[in-house]
Image (cartoon, rainbow, N blue to C red; front, side):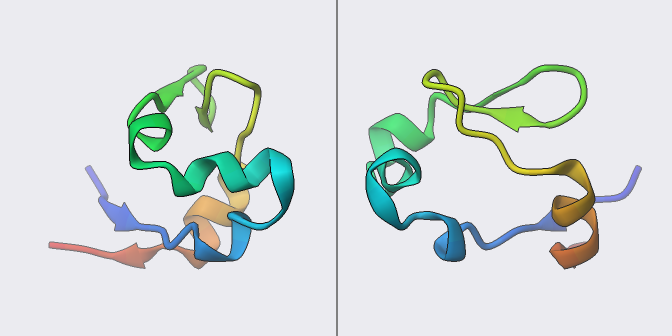
Length: 57
């Protein structure tokens, strides 16, 4: 299994994605089996998660 760390800072701008600034809201993340999603529909493209994510140990 491969693990990566993805910095969402570039996404937390504006009203909609800005909700991710709230740690309580951020913790509500789930998966739809394909990517990560939040309750109001925010998501991040799985290709971006993989390509831009930093490999962790």
